[in-house]
Amino acid sequence: MTPNPSRSDTPTDAGSREHRSGFACLVGRPNVGKSTLTNALVGEKVAIMSARPQTTRHTIRGIVHRPDAQLVLVDTPGLHRPRTLLGQRLNDLVAETLAEVDVVAFCLPADQKIGPGDKFIAERLAPLMGGRRATPVVAVVTKADLVDRRRLAEHLMAVDQLARSMDREWSDIVPVSAKDGYQVDELTDVLVSHLPAGPELYPGGELTDEPEQVMVAELVREAALEGVRDELPHSLAVVVDEIVEREGSGDPAKGRPPLLDVRVNLFVERESQKAIVIGRGGSRLREVGTNARRGIEKLLGTRVYLDLHVKVAKDWQRDPKQLQRLGF
Ligand SMILES: Nc1nc2c(ncn2[C@@H]2O[C@H](COP(=O)(O)OP(=O)(O)OP(=O)(O)O)[C@@H](O)[C@H]2O)c(=O)[nH]1
Image (cartoon, rainbow, N blue to C red; front, side):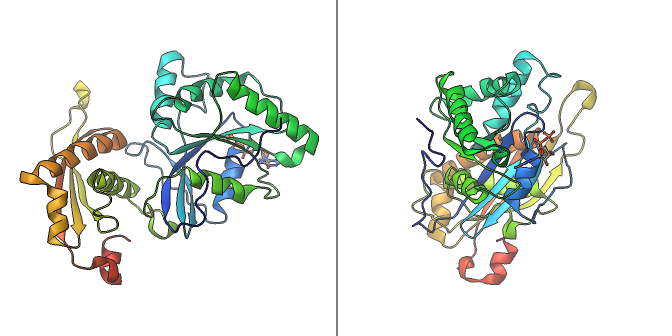
């Protein structure tokens, strides 16, 4: 059987206008074509973020910006230097970081047999691929231009077999060539199909100076919409007011990380929506705060005090000025 290159668990919803957004990371041995493929996916709009490793866990490599979706490609530390990090620590790191993205693209070059390096990575991906909170892993067969059809078909089968040997299945198997553009758009479609519905994470496809602010806003928005998505479909905008370190809160000598004060405004359109977000006696907002704070602490790698304010900004969705101010 030849694996179907475009099979997908979550088919692209071509008929729907729902915007999708989220994070993907390309993993694979050195030299398999990850950087070249990133550039091909992103097009000329490669946006390299000024590195802020102390605050953001992932370095953003580029953003695929389309009218219907925004796909943020991030780097995952750990897999690039498998020989220098050993055992459990590596497993933990990889599992933790990969579990935070929406989809993983595992790159295997078409012109090379699957080797120990590929198996090493596959074994680290396997735990992600099972269970209830599984992260989809797409096998990407890169450099397809270097082999003929017969060898490509054989390689696709070998890649399929690699997952089966671990009792797993890739979400999709997609052959591509970043060099001649073969199937690059198809790969984008497949990756996008695994993203959740959501707004643009980077308005206009641009990285801001404060990407962590955008991600913090997104975490708060997600938490605030949890369970009430039907009632507040697109009526909630989240703006991070400030992220400041509380003076004297950290003690590097004792390994105590600083406390960040994160102040966030949630804008809704009507009083009734404000009541939904806040809940009876503020109970829901407290829950939203707790959930969002956990995510923000993970993202920023330090302790966080999260201060949430819910405000009514009437009809903000129809007012371009307001939209701009709110970061849309
Ligand atoms: N023929 C062909 N060559 C490719 C393709 N993609 C990448 N290459 C070549 O493969 C080599 C490695 O590509 P990179 O994109 O640097 O690979 P990488 O996985 O990012 O490598 P690391 O940064 O070391 O992890 C380069 O010489 C590329 O020109 C492709 O689709 N076809």
